[in-house]
Length: 88
Image (tube, rainbow, N blue to C red; front, side, top):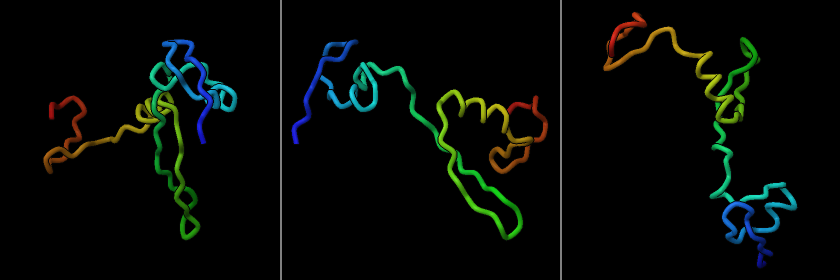
């Protein structure tokens, strides 16, 4: 199956027409400004009624998630560091 190609609005290089008609993208992958999505493993429920799930996030959502879920302490080279201002 040969894909029908159209020019990218950014660089004018050929891109699959399907990218525009099915997904609404007007530019090719190289010209895209969308970052790579991230996944986070999540455990839900409690007791013996737990399950694991995957949460898919945009790069901005992932950064926000990381900012909100920073560990209270870190372990570096096998030494626990609970002082947040100490250098590792």
